[in-house]
Amino acid sequence: WKPAQIFELWDTLLQGLPIGALLVSELGKNVKSIPLTGQTAAIEAAGGSLGLVDGQQRTLAMLAGWPLPAGTPISHRLWVDFADTPRSGEHFRMRVTTRNQPFGFARDNPNSKLSLAERRKAQTEWLTTQPESAQSQSYQLPDFQGTRPWCNQPSLPLDLRDLMQWWHEFNDARVWKHKVLEHLKAQKAPSIDSTSIWASLGTKHQTLVEQRIDEFATGLKRIHAAQIPLIRLESRLF
Image (cartoon, rainbow, N blue to C red; front, side):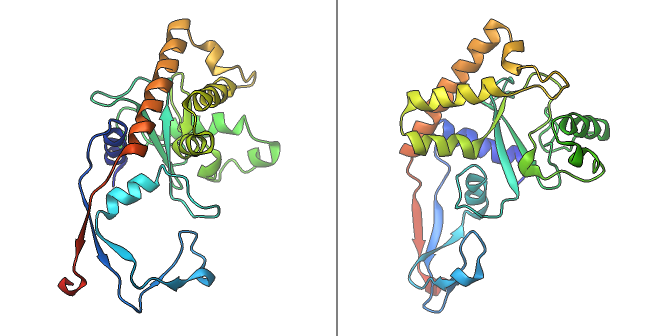
């Protein structure tokens, strides 16, 4: 899926709206499974388990924002920018970064890459936050697990996997909101003086950010209360 499709699915989930049924079928006796971590030593029999027949793209889009076992290879990081205005028809501004696009895609057209000038500016700003050893290798594409989506205006993005992990860890909306706000206030502008992004926001903007945190907490409650129907197909049909 393209980034915009991933955002639309998550926006639907956060609103508590249905995303359709998934088709599954029982796996045969000789089928083996490999864990998400890709460790071939952990291959085990999967006979009798349910395999996904239809709904792979939706499932992968959900996994892009779901906490995964340690060591699981990932290709996407999904972000929620609490400081930025959501696109028309959406409730939250979401961004995505990938191995090949470590600073994300265009803010106003999430399916388009950043322009060359924007990518250069993003890399220059990122390098100011790195040790000298990394700055000497500025020609290399940075590891996307150490970058954030670039934006040409005040931005406070948090990794959706972290937001979900904290929700599971605390199981308390009040504590979760405090944790989120704490991390947002700690974010620094990518500049020499590293000023606080939160402090640079006006009072009205800060209030708006806090409202979005409240709304996102409500969305997470909806997600964890959601029920996705499974339609089971007979294996003889394949």
